[in-house]
Every structure is written in structure tokens, then in C-alpha cells.
Picture 1 (cartoon, helix red, strand yellow):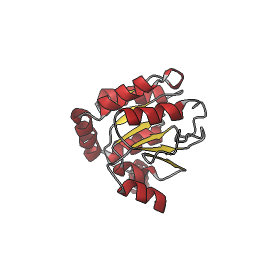
Picture 2 (cartoon, helix red, strand yellow; picture 1 turned 90 degrees about the horizontal axis):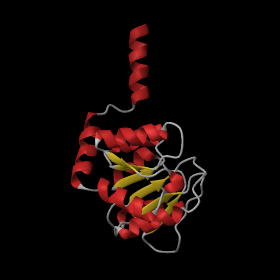
Picture 3 (spheres, helix red, strand yellow; picture 1 turned 90 degrees about the vertical axis):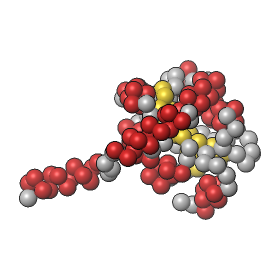
Length: 175
């Protein structure tokens, strides 16, 4: 983890992570992310991603980062707001963190629904319809004790990394 990220993580309560990965349709999303975090009085780590998300001002409560290992970062945040890609959804679940999924396209709507059904997250409006109020409400929902607790419970039941487990099974099966 880069020093500036370590410093930020160590300087207060765990922040909320915001990142939309390879999604490019993120116009206005930076403002929504920062304003939602501030409405709840929490700090934010904003992953720039392909949409080039950035803090909207020089406030010390937000940090923009380049690509970081989800496996290393996610256990150190309080909640994860993301696009709903299968990899990010799995990394958030494995870290035992509640998640807000802002679907953009394809299977992301499925993962948003699954997180909600499993009680480990909330589905926010699709990216074009996302507002600060909707983001704030979804974050408030997932940071409630019942969702946070369910995310931890599910994480304790997951066997990660799945690809390594599957490869090991295949090697044993065909050896």
C-alpha cells in the first residue's frame, strides 16, 4: 500500500471506498460520492478508475487513489460503493464489508440484486439516475448493524480464492 494511502487509513475512522472500475460513464459521480460521504460524516477513498473520479475540492476527508489491491484495501474500509463487477462484488464480500452497488450495465444489475437478497448490501439507482440523496440513503442502509453483521457472517463462510480452490480440485481429480 503506498505511504499516502497508509497515512490516510491510519489517520481516522475507516473510510468508505468509492470506485467504478472500468466504467467510463461517471460524469458527476465524483460530486455524488463526496457529498454522500460528507452527509454521513465519513471519510472517503475514491478510486479514479477509467472514469477518472476525483475529490471535488481539497478537503482532507477524501483521498483519490489509482488502482490498489482490493484484497488489501477492502478489509480496512467501512463500506464499499462500486459498479457491481463480479470481481469487485466478490472482493467486498470476502472482506466482510457492506456494499452499495451502482450498476452500469450487464451482470452488474444481477450482482446488485444478489447483494441485496443476501443482506450484505443495497442496490442504488443505475449510474445515470444516481443522486446524492440516493447514495446517502443507500450508504446509511448498509452501514446499519444488521447489514454490517450479515456481511461479516457471509465472509466467514466464503472460501477464497475460488480460482485456487477450483484449480486444486481439478489437479486432484485428474492426477
